[in-house]
Length: 192
Image (cartoon, rainbow, N blue to C red; front, side, top):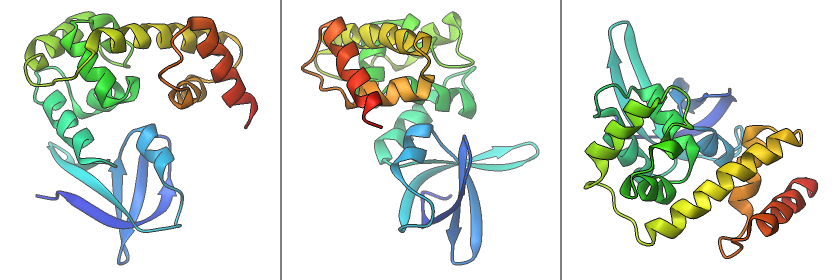
């Protein structure tokens, strides 16, 4: 079993990287968050990996942090959640926020992931509620709901979903007011 791979990124696409390890290129599917953490060919990087055996071949899924890999493996252990859907769930929010949404029983947050319907989101909550823990889950879920509204607002202003999420991720957590978070996110976006 492959647990981690260290090499240089030689190619990068929307949902995968090619990691060169001593002349062998590994195609590793990942999240945009992980893709944004590294740049092409600059340095050695390590991805924690899950090897998925399929009928027509093998696929590697990689993550910057071991905790992301563990969460991914919890997600794919649930009936009806495949690797691509699990990647989509991981892109909705960071691990702390996802754990809070699960702990607070909020399927509406999980359904923002591509390929995850209400029934699947509810199944994720039922199966993972006791397995994932986070403190201050109610406040975290409230912030996530606000940020979900802000993402839609920023999209209506012409920004992409990824740009909006990235900008909100850079806004300090202590800023909780909706208008203040929007102003801070717009300031981040205008600085680019």
